[in-house]
Image 1 (tube, helix red, strand yellow):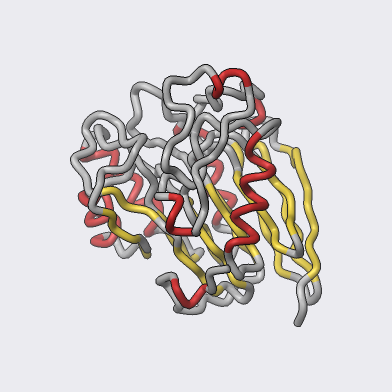
Image 2 (image 1 turned 120 degrees about the horizontal axis):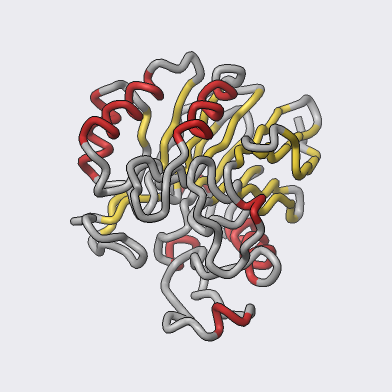
Length: 273
């Protein structure tokens, strides 16, 4: 098991409430971007101590004005905002975000990384990153090499993934994974590989909320991108955020669908204090 001290990002941010978003894909003309969903997420973020964006905030082909608007919208928030890049985010994006005062935490890989779209010149950016928010978070987008968490590539189980030309790829979470097949087992495998109270991922466009041995497991699917997972076409996989509240003896998590305006999944996990 890896300990959190092996990952970067040890500064503590006190938080009683965290709003998680991922896979926004602002400026993505191929998969799509819904500005109304993004604005709704930003409005909700104002009611939380921390707004955590778990990768694919932007598309590498996004116009400069889109990148600037997104950076400004995050810097204007009263909530502490932390961004972990995904396979669509570039070093140029990070520089713009940081110029606007946004807290971006990442590791840099020599390879572009599988899943990097056209227009991405590299290097590949991502996690794993740990955050101390009063409870310990391990944040990883999902495209990062399996060896970062001591894992093996995922085995395809669902029919679409089995017929994919890329059945086994060196990604912590393969974006051909499906929440009805591979994702529950893989999320629990990630939890067992690290010492953290909360594990948050993205990348798959396939939501998941659960727990493993006292660790809360979260993947919102997407927050502002309408593209569902290639192998799991559930319409509630898209336009989601997750609210995590830190109580004295438990964590309360709710996935909220931004279009329907309702909670679609809940999970509670006990914590020692």
